[in-house]
Image (spheres, rainbow, N blue to C red):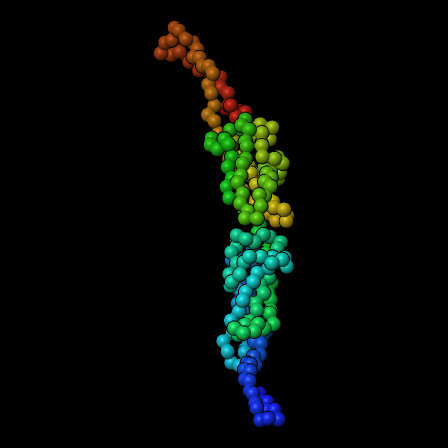
Length: 238
């Protein structure tokens, strides 16, 4: 710009400016599309173009249930998520001079069902029909501590609705099979279960007394009679 007065004096000034258009809105996605608290999340932004042909970069910010967090970048650690949360990534395109319109994608953190990781019964072996059995289990759930419940079954029929089974009260006999079923239940009502079968062992009968008659004056032609008393600790007839 120049200006000249009536005496012929003039002055000029130069002002430079740059015309810059904002990059276009990107496409954003989160993988995997289905997630739990054991899933690391990855965000991808692409597709923005700059009117001047410049290089477009993306700023990625993560929100938990709509609230800002300190997490930025393409990945979100599984350890920071909780079941029931919705995580959103907001991607803002930039050409280095101006930001474009952001875009976002979201994923819901699903519940992980519990799993029964171990089950045991005491006594373990041998098991006799006058024993009282106690079932115990361990469970794993990455979201919470699940509740454990037990029941005892015999050929599919419930014999006890708890961890303990009195075999005598159940009328057990050697060879009978009983199964402990342990179930883990989380706060969402999802379950995991495991079973352990126990077979009742047999015990040898016990001879409590025996005698031979006659006990004296035995000759070669004497007919001997042997008598004994026996008992079966399992309740059978020996």
